[in-house]
Image (cartoon, rainbow, N blue to C red; front, side, top):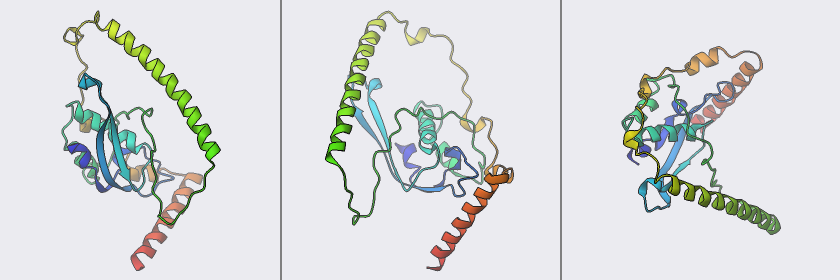
Length: 215
């Protein structure tokens, strides 16, 4: 949780996303709140199901998966909490280390906020069909989960303890990993339609910022 709180505020998240240099010209995003919640508690705390809840103004391509990947490294004791602030320091670390993202399966866009004066219309029949469909999917997952849990409980009585496992792979610190090209290099190598797209988006951003500053 301490590591996650380091993300709150406005930051340049280019080291926590997959850079699309042609379509994104601004990598500053605001994280308004973070929390780690227990969704499903188990008799063995190691099997607790947790949710990382992130509230922000908007998100970059794969930003959440990259953030969670780094938080996993910290939670496993492989990285210090300070690695978050170091990756957010673009002057010291202008290029993203080539680390793997967290899996996409648990990622859910849960809620979006809109002005209070907007009224939404909806069809109750459609909502009922969605509920019926989700119920069928939920039953399928619960049954499969119960079967797998029973298999694991049976097999683990015969499995060797972790102490007898083979040697662990050597871990390379996040900031010691090879890095990808800088945003500036990616932009410089754009050509054709991708270069035109970048220039058009950059011009729109500059016009918007100019209006904001003059108002």
